[in-house]
Image 1 (spheres, rainbow, N blue to C red):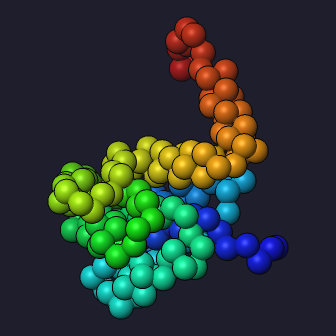
Image 2: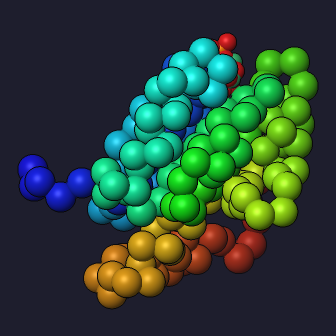
Length: 165
Ligand code: RP5
């Protein structure tokens, strides 16, 4: 352990978002990027959100990944209170399959951006990769690890399809 604060914060509106957001955490771990994961609800813990977002830059975070479902106001409200880049992950909701989450996150007014990813697992994975790409701009060693990840992914894709059995 070092005293260096983790560069990435993964925040989510509920414990129920963690199975989705863990995919972002897994990518960061694979690439050797430190992160901190917290439950911060825009609706149920607004004061926690206020304190987190206002203090995030001073705490040393560089990128925030924010996942929420349904009336998913967490990424946008976080972006309203920090200058840090915010990547929004729409979590798949039980009733509307995440379309509500996506529309809640993506339609930000001009002036307060949220980089919105795909609904669910793919969005969480890509949020982890995008956060890594941002950090890699000023970290050649991390850039090399990201290049390696992409190369391994490419090498793992078969050219011809196979039958399942
Ligand atoms: C949102 O409400 C959370 O981000 C979550 O996706 C959704 C449902 O939360 P729970 O009722 O499962 O706690 O705030």
